[in-house]
Image (cartoon, rainbow, N blue to C red; front, side):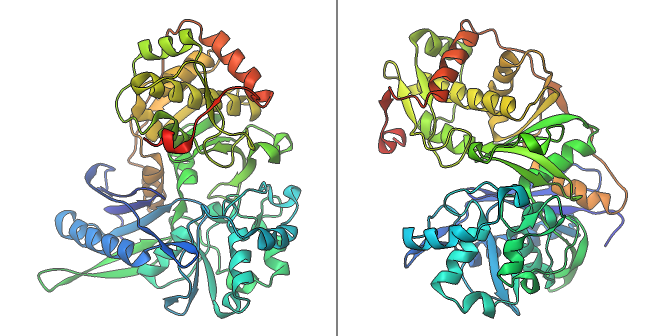
Length: 469
């Protein structure tokens, strides 16, 4: 690998996949985006990996031609895996948002290790991707045997470009049921199922693992160093640590809101509230709580993409409009059905109610994970403009920092590559978020909490079709 990496970071999300080209000085000089395609094939929903591979190859070639890219790195969303043999994918990559049939789920769920071993709460769908591996085994008992490797999602892409199969701990340690954080080893599920031989050797995120030859349009070629990929939210955690944050809570926002607090003891974690131990790129268990906040905001707001004013929030509070959990699986208020209470609302006020909901869910999660230190807010919800300020209003005893850069996972992936040559070109670009002045917010929070903790038996349930209009 080169001492002056010019990096193509592919930040592969469930809904949106992005390319960021960063110079050796850490400056973004190009970006590109696409939407992964998920197809229904028989009774399964699977990734069109060939289409995504083609986009990555074409984008990489353009980045090499236009900007001299010499390194490639992948950051990937969680809950996803690939079964490969030799040079082939032997089963399509599953969409984690599908539930095994009831009879199969009842059987495979008896095999899940104890929470005290994996710190992975038992979650629906494929949120624990060990569960989806078991599902495929039930569908075809020979399938896992035929695979020579079970690859985590970023490692699938690192392999596609390097030809080398490796594992990586931040992804394995992300509520997969496959990793035992306190033992720093694969879990008893991996051992009992005979999967250890399917798990390639561990490599640290960012490590150089091979090279890829890019064929250029002028007939020449260029070699690109391929680095081992990383779990996206763990990459964001690494990024802010690289900026000098030490004792802090990270609120990483996107489709999921994932909250890390390394100061919270693991004994506090409650599996019933979607609390877990993530594992950092350096094998350290870290207390985490999460909910699908970005998805819930999109659904509850009706797909609102514009700014939201403080006046809209004040109006929502004055009218007594509440949004109550949950509009997506998982989270600290599971087994409750998302609904609005109070007068009907639309447009900016509906979006304001949705934003208040996500902020209040975040506030609740921060209490559950015992956050009293500084908070750093990163990711897509930064773009709403008021999210960090709302948290500052709700948590005035803590300092809230909002990143000017909403792409912490991509920058963390790049930081791992820069770290290979002892470089750190990034500077701290966060700013302290000031509390918004919102009349009645404290009483509104107390009323919302009371409804959530009681299971909110009353309220106007909203059909999901209505919410998606």
